[in-house]
Length: 117
Image (cartoon, rainbow, N blue to C red):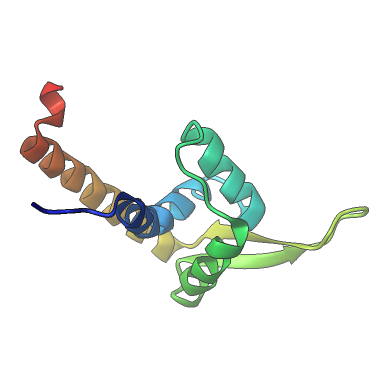
């Protein structure tokens, strides 16, 4: 019998999709890290939750790869925040990732019979 640790499985799924989620959420406008976390939770109906602290290392890696660009913004009465926007290279990668994700989901559905459920 095969035993799958569902918490580990869920964690790996979240980890593997976080980049795609971030790029998608900043596609049309710049957002800061905490806002990205809240939008993921809101748009997923609460099914997906990320702590802002766990997304920042990924944001830094995406910025280092040239997929996003960050800019510090200071507003009166608020903390300084770093807003991230998608670069042209990030748009290209987002398009590729969306296509790959759709194909992956189709393949999983064909195997698991989820489309017949």
